[in-house]
Image (cartoon, rainbow, N blue to C red; front, side, top):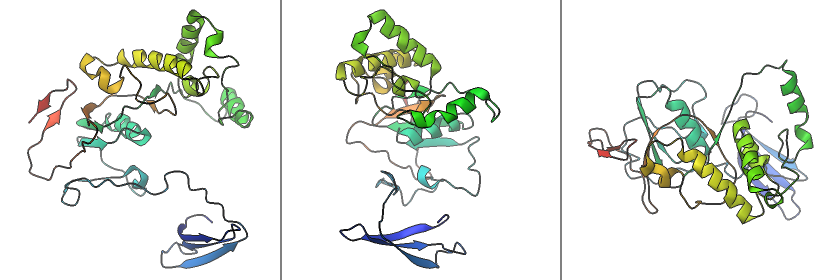
Length: 267
């Protein structure tokens, strides 16, 4: 069923289940139907329910607020000339920032943990593109659903020079290749993982003009092992939230306190 919302699902020990869905037939939430099945398999992913943090001032905030999991589908969100704050630096936060930065007056990021983002290296393509058609056709033959696999060798199998040369090649290709097309021990060996993190860190720091932000955006010690990544382009203002700190929504009329790209607070 398409265009419906699951309100409740119940399964017994044998996985036989009943699901109540709303929006059947005329898409009205008032129309409900119970569907029974021999087996009920829940494929909702790890984050089907949006998380809304208990931010002080959330109820009294008079500006516009949007959750990326509930982004308006029936209209465009006006970004031009706006001052935008993005809370959180996950995949959605990175995607919002790099788009908003093209139109907004300024974009401020409130982060607690840096995102190990990769360059996208996008290029125009059409359905008639032979290279694209070949890549799409080969996806089912690779473990990650992309048109390439991890390399058939481990980091320790090559010299330092070949390792760095391979990293550079993957970096220039961009997308998820530095993650899913890397040496085959990247996910299983911490030493291998750390070597590529060091490469990523140095590449990222080269793009950050203010050295004071290096430890915030590309710290010397990895915040976590190099893992699933977000592709990125663009820039934004940053405000670092230390553990235990939380972003606070500013009610209308309250003086603005900003942190600019130099890490300087302004009133």
